Amino acid sequence: YDNSTLTFDHVEATTSATSGIETNGNNTNDSVTLKNSTLNVPNGFGIYFPSSGTLTIDNSTINAKTMGVQVCAGSLEITGDKTAINVTGGPMDKTENDGAIQDGAAISVVDRTGYKGLGKVEVKNGSFTAKTDEALKAYKYENKEEGKFDNDDKKLTVTGGTFSGNVSDYVPDNTPVATVSTQGG
Image 1 (cartoon, one colour):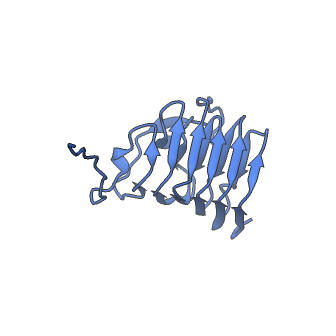
Image 2 (cartoon, rainbow, N blue to C red):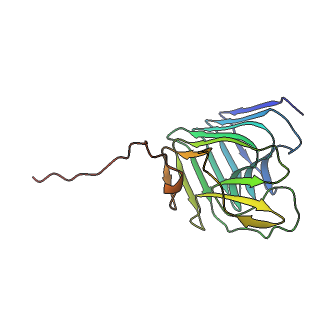
Image 3 (cartoon, rainbow, N blue to C red):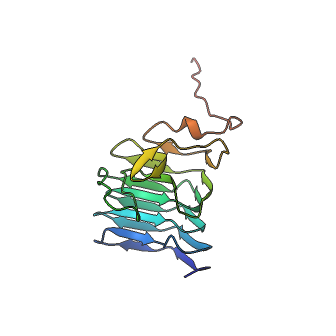
């Protein structure tokens, strides 16, 4: 449905299905929030969000096998120091032109032809691990082929968190970075 809101707050959900939470790419202005919750999808992917609107992950854990969270349209905000997305398996071959791309990433941002367009994607805090070391994967996807993700407009930003892979391309220039110093005794 268009203009739908779905909020999971203090929920623990486990499914043996291939997917945890999905919206439809034809939907407009949907809102999905996972807050203080845990989503376990040991045989597939956590969240697939291809509709316009907003996906929020706040102080929640997603444990999945083939992909943690993927946005192809709309906005994504990941926040909360208790947030963790863990992907234990690798990617799956993509044979059809629509639906989730199980790419093995903890956070997957995909610019796809024919979808409603990406809004802001902000990763502010959390821990993100993937077996493939692609904690954050951003790419263009067209005709079943991956291409370079254009982030010139800075839609995708990382301002905090711990990642099993390099995300420096998405850290804004003006973001303060913590340093470690050692003091002699």
